[in-house]
Amino acid sequence: MIQRLIEAGFSGKVTKTPCLKNSEITAICHAAREIFLSQPSFLELSAPIRIVGDVHGQYPDLLRLFNQCGFPPHSNYLFLGDYVDRGKQSLETILLLMCYKIKYPENFFLLRGNHECANVTRVYGFYDECKRRCNVKTWKTFVNVFNTLPIAAVVASKIFCVHGGLSPSLNTMDDIRNIQRPTDVPDYGLLNDLLWSDPSENTLEWEDNERGVSFCFGKSIVNGFLNKHDLDLVCRAHMVVEDGYEFFNGRTLVTVFSAPNYCGEFDNAAAIMNVNEDLVCNFDILRPAYDTPLSPTFNQLQPRLLQQVAGRRNRPSPPMFQEPQSV
Image 1 (cartoon, helix red, strand yellow):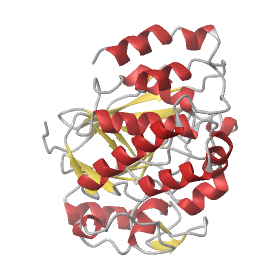
Image 2 (cartoon, rainbow, N blue to C red; image 1 turned 135 degrees about the vertical axis):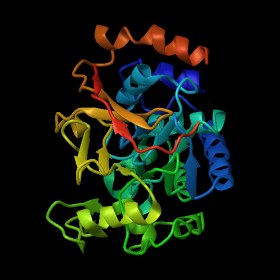
Image 3 (cartoon, rainbow, N blue to C red; image 1 turned 90 degrees about the vertical axis):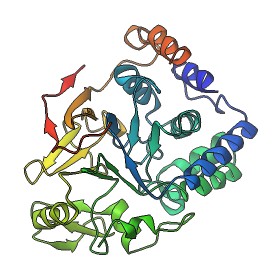
Image 4 (spheres, helix red, strand yellow; image 1 turned 30 degrees about the vertical axis):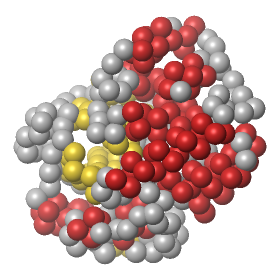
């Protein structure tokens, strides 16, 4: 099924129906759901690992990302959420990611984003895509999976990873571990904040978020959180940033966004944060691809992609950053 999903990415077309049958989609969802529930709400991961931000249904860009950084299991991955909505191929995007989770459950990790939620997907595209290309029952099946996704992760006990940000309700990491799944995203509280909150240069501590949901938090909150939990870095997604990554409060928080030319409007680059065994971090940069998938630029990737698909530590020191690699 992975092979078929990847080959579908070379067609350059959003087909009327996905390349997988409804029965196959249901089987993938059920298998992924069981794996998510078998693993904790708060993941404790080792380096090396690649950390990926929002991808939002931009399926050709997801394939470009894997081509540049390595297809599983050649690289270990942690995705920070927001797999669906806005882009044209949310179905292929989430299906490929779940297939990799099923095949490599200990090397490939998916966190929940604020868009992995019934109410949000009803508004921003995934519900409509499921209804148009499959059926409403398929959307409900995906929502049942979204409700089981883990919430946050820590890499090498030093890098705290989450989709949105921090919460005034977060006192210990056990608060995240104790979030019971399956669960919808509540309107307020710890889970809501972890998926929705944002850092703000203009905020001292906590302020209401302009999104109308959750909070914005300031530099003192980040510093206090890192000191309290003996962490060095917060890595989060949730915001489009021009270069694909952006630091806040020196280098104590970084936003990673991995959908280039987001919605076809922002002309932003995408980034993937690479963490090696020594916790040295650098960024792969994915520039917007203005070619269509049928153009020579994209088709040159095909042999390498298919070849990789056919084929196949942990030192608690402060993260260091190297200059980004780009294409």
